Length: 149
Image (cartoon, rainbow, N blue to C red; front, side):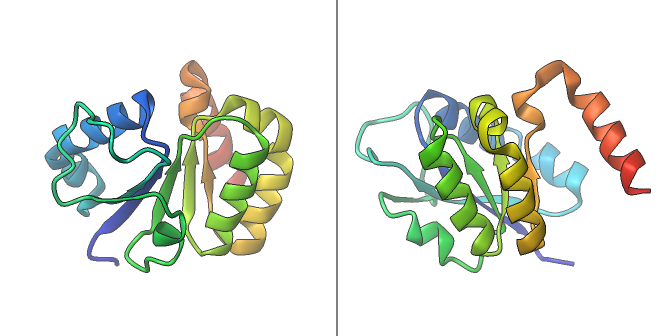
């Protein structure tokens, strides 16, 4: 079992800032529930100089996505860039780098979902998307677990 789960984030706007804030604020509960420390490692965004409402001390800020792709300590990448084509290409690169992906991008999943799931299968990684469908979370989890059995 891994010692910790390293998290990378691509897209540090309002939603990304909120996600980091939530992860940091609830880290003890998250660690207790998951049984393993979840650590925010690196944030990639085009604008890393604008002050945000979250303390990023100890978190690497970069404009270069390769800093996330090439970091062996990052296991999961949260994609919050929006759009479809750029996000699709980004997620394929993340999967090819051997990392799982979490996205809340409904438009991306509607347009490229099938292709992303094939890419994830080929890379033996996961694309996790429950955040994009809100109230359907229990149904999706139940279906996925039921179909896997």
